[in-house]
Length: 246
Ligand code: C5P
Image 1 (cartoon, rainbow, N blue to C red):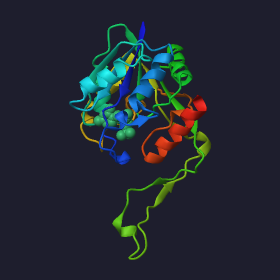
Image 2: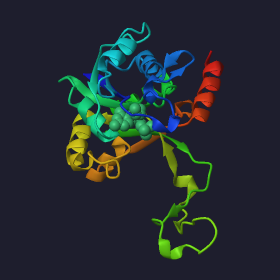
Image 3: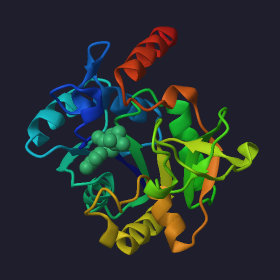
Image 4: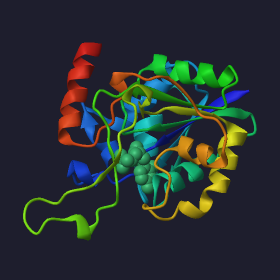
């Protein structure tokens, strides 16, 4: 039995303000997608890789990932969809008959360390069918109501009304890679397929689709190095982490 990793790299990354997709932005001379693929490969628990890529860039992405000497895994590339959920579904369709565990990982988390990958796969192989890495949150988090014009003052900044303050000790900020029993993940994507076409409705992570089925999702310890690159500042932090790594 084998483990497939789907590496999502089909996003545009507009918030980074570059004129190329985020996964192709470089960090220490290598595209983010290459950093992520290297760490999946060096975990020793991934058997093959499917990378989702922006339309028209499959040959480019295949070349830079498959030809990297540190990515010693079979690599396939598939064009992603309109949302992350649709991209993962496109990757999942390429799972081989022997793939019984599927990891879904974002190229936007290029430094997720091999030991984190191993921890997630070990938990799935131990019988937890849906596993996400998570970190305790340090901020107090408030849930707000959708912004309501009627609650705005005629002057001053826009405000949102707080609905709830969840117990911080019971909150986790979740990361990728997320790991799944392959059959459960397929069922979750089939169940949520109607949501996948629109950014407002689509799931922002795969565990959310599993939860929507009513199935259990478990959290293992995350890793600060698995930070998500969204802004230029995140890239600077990642560059510092890379320096610490070496
Ligand atoms: O945009 P965001 O950073 O939330 O995207 C998370 C991950 O999903 C990124 O690695 C991005 O490349 C990927 N993605 C995708 N297909 C999309 C949108 C995002 O593969 N349509």
